[in-house]
Length: 181
Image (tube, rainbow, N blue to C red; front, side, top):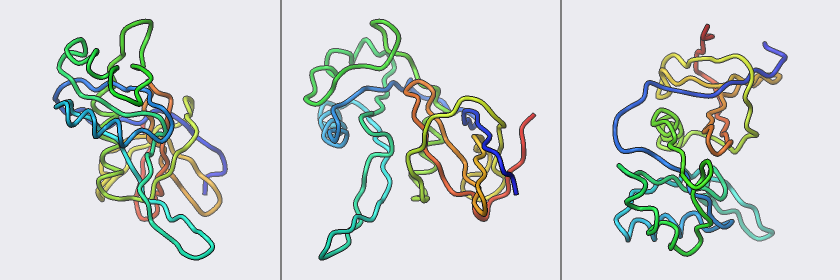
């Protein structure tokens, strides 16, 4: 069992398509912003995970955003949708450098989708930059690369989106991982 934390960005062989960009939203507005973008024919992705909330009288499973205050937008050219996106209620602005948004590599979006589409037990995780890269072998995450975080009796893979410096952790129980040199 490893007794240290190893970190690095995640990647999977990138697929093709329009470029992905991040937009910053007000807290708890992610789903509403994504719905408004869809009504305006703009492709948006808000990764969500299921969480059990407990009240004194009941328990309920709810869907919460994996990355609080962020929605991903896909566009062939960001300039074509820039104005439309910033006029959506709940949007604070584009994530980027200066006045231009920066594209997120398709492989990072694909890695986040692999986790959310399979409904794996994932949770937000502090963004980490340094450490050992690993690749998952087998199962629905086959080929996904990321950060191996080892704790006593628990190994987790951290999937990162570098541009917004947000990460998510997923349990590696039952998966084989190999180091990447």
